[in-house]
Amino acid sequence: MLTTSAGNGPSVGLAPSPSLAPDTAQGTARRWWRDAVIYQVYVRSFRDTTGDGIGDLAGVRAGLPYLKKLGVDGIWLSPFFPSPQHDHGYDVADYRDVDPAYGDLAAFDLLVAEAHRLGLKVLLDIVPNHCSSEHPWFRAALEDEPGGPSRSLFHFADGRGTDGELPPNNWHAMFGGPAWSRVKDKDGRPGQWYLHMFTPEQPDLNWRNPEVSADFEKVLRFWLDRGVDGFRIDVAAGLFKHPELPDSPDPAADERTRDSVNPLAWNQPEVHGVWRSWRALCEEYTARDGHDRLLVGEVSVRTPSEQAAYVRPDELHQAFFFHLLTAPWDVDVFRKVISEALTDIASTGSTVTWVLNNHDQVRTVTRYATGQGGTAAGVGPARARAAALLMLALPGAAYVYQGEELGLPEVDDLPDEVLTDPIFHRTGSRQHVRDGCRVPLPWSGQAAPFGFGTAADGAADGGARTWLPQPASFAGHTADRALADTGSFWHLYREGLQLRRTLPQLGEGTLRWLDSPPQVLAFVRGDGLVCAVNFGTEPVPAPVPGTPLLASGDCPEGTLPGSTAAWWMHAPDSSESREP
Image (cartoon, rainbow, N blue to C red; front, side):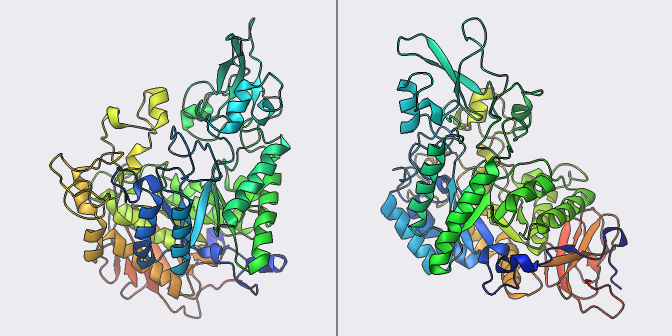
């Protein structure tokens, strides 16, 4: 008999509020983003059509049928704007064009048109916290005098010390070193300093200057007018800094954690005004044609309750819930973060936006291979498959990072000489280096470039060059091989997405926790869809009888093996707890 877990109450999840009816399933126009599954495309590593070893927009367009077959609802494109590529596009020199390495505006328009023909949404990655040091604004600022109008678009300040030789404050950049760099005056002497919370090639914009806000509104309209369905917002808790730029009590916190920790540089209250403005702009476009435009934020804050402030009804539609991504493979931690998310985010009327992988994090196949009981062969892939099935069963939306559906591991043995991540070049340390999850995708064949580019696989010179080298082990993870193997990661994702689309119990809604053995997380969705995950290494009795609808691994009837997740349909009896 199924029973709810008394210690957590009978129901956790989104309870639709009458005051938020347009955003809920009870509203007259259900909003597509509330339980959508979006596929993150890291353009540089998706598919190459020119043979230069770098993915491009035409390659994304060529891969759209593959994504449609997988069953996602849309794509999020990493930055493809003109950029010197110091941080592979997150240093933007022009927000209204396409970098020639990736194509041109005509290629972009073709991509959007084809995606929409296939029923796929298109989200762009906007970077408002900082721009490139080659942006025209910053070039003008370097030519300007201290206190001049061009410098007011950034954070320029006089240094401390006898001759201004010390930075204006003690902050460290997230990617290593001081958060300030000094410029030279026109006479060649050392001058003011400017703030960059990531690299010197990425100066932070000053959002207290209304010219910055006005220009970004034009940027959003430029791309909305070209048909995009929304934006992923980089560093959405940034933009504003403490107006006095004081010293931090823990100046190296960002550098140490590679996260937005400095309370003086992130999560300032003024940022919410920007998101209210951007939400109003998106609603303006939605009102014109009835098609929702989406804002999803990269919101890195300490607690789910802080994140909830970003997804209030008049701010961002979604914010990535990173607490699940950073959770270790531990049943108690998973249960805690899921409960907190569903409680705090639901109070705003939004839905939780779940994510397990992205372009900045070690892939789950590798990440879950360590920790509690994580030494046996194959445990990393098994746990990654189980986590994927768990994520797809949770209420709300989900984002899948390219290659996740192929079971790609982290490429953690790249030689130093090929690493491109500015974290490595600024710190000399491989810790937190992100290149390993960005290696170009393998599509077909037995040797590099595995169908990624136009050159023949296994060419005489050792294979076509890709901007990061692909390991020989990628031969076991190609898309062609995955599609042919019904037991692959790809088929698990596809079947999970198909069930999510067809079963009314999945997607938006609530969940009810079930009593379960110590290493098992189990819950009910809607009217009888049961999901259970065995975080342990030993098999346990299945929470319900019968054969699962879908399982992440071999799951004999009546048993839930270790490192395995499964879904069952179960008709509750009259003694089972119901939602209030």
